[in-house]
Amino acid sequence: MYLNTKLYTRVHELAEQLMASAQKQDDEAFDALYSELKAICTDNEALETNHPVQWEALADFTPDYQEALTLYKKALQLALDGKERDIESSIYFSMASLHGELGEKEQALEYLAEAERSAKRSADKELISDIKDLKEFLMDD
Image (cartoon, rainbow, N blue to C red):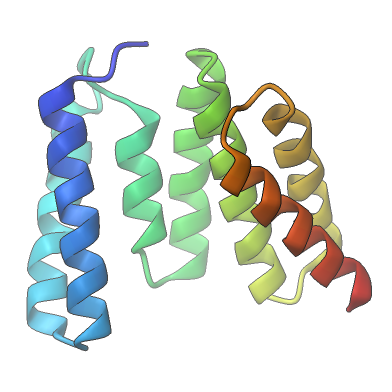
């Protein structure tokens, strides 16, 4: 699966801007940026440029948990289809985190096990550490 550099750069920029507007509690800017990211996702959905990174980013900033899970599942399917292991691990981790926040420990642990399994082939040491930390947190809970 090919990730267009221009698309990745724009998605990354939007994610940074979304984080900044969320931290400033600037809802107007956040909503405009979120709409732009959502448009990128829907515009690329039927194209060769459709990539899990854009859907994962959209899910990361979706305030409705159920909608976010739906978007993560879409991203995950794209990652699985494209054998994008690092992205796959990250999405599983995000889904585990979200289920943990919802108090759904069993589901969180299931997704975390998948994140751990797919991360074994990953060079992303930070993600591997985050997976370990979340697992310890969930097991202590």
